[in-house]
Length: 248
Image 1 (spheres, helix red, strand yellow):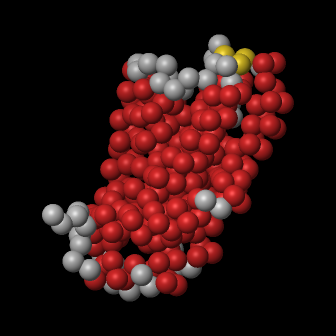
Image 2 (tube, rainbow, N blue to C red; image 1 turned 90 degrees about the vertical axis):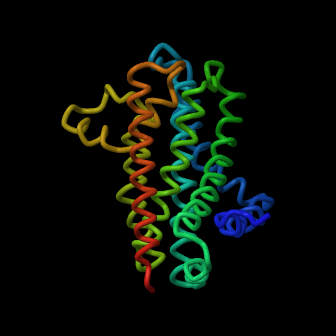
């Protein structure tokens, strides 16, 4: 039985990730940013500050999960697609192979999701140990999966658009970093100045942070989930179009 076309694409990236995974330095590098934020904000404020009826640490952990899944899913795919295109020239082999653009896209996205989920698991583990009010709910799982998917798809888009590896850092500085700090990771969205709210609610991580903190689905949760599905479909179709039109 012939494997689907996305399988070899995924396995190539997965094997590369697995080789890094068992290096102690890689695990520490994946944890360093969340742990710094956890110590600086979560343990520093801890039970002294209440957010939405819970202690700040329990509020912060889901936001760090959302941020870590975004950063790791996006960075891995954007960097690997860019390097494969411009330096290793392996992406050209994928395009010339008898596999569809959708298969290439799915393989890259799934590989990015694995990395994003792994980084998220490390933060979740810390949350289960350090935060008494932290709980994994169905909205939490849906938000995490959708976040990994849509930012992996965005990584493909950026990896296809950039003309140098250094250029991917520009997209990160103008897209990923602002979302990490202004989309509800560290403080509730109702505390954002009114003139910024219209922009903040147009960004996908905002709706991940809304959904990931829901104990059960409500009207706001369903709306955020639909918007995450919209962003995921948008980035997926954009990435497919870029691969279809690839001619380097």
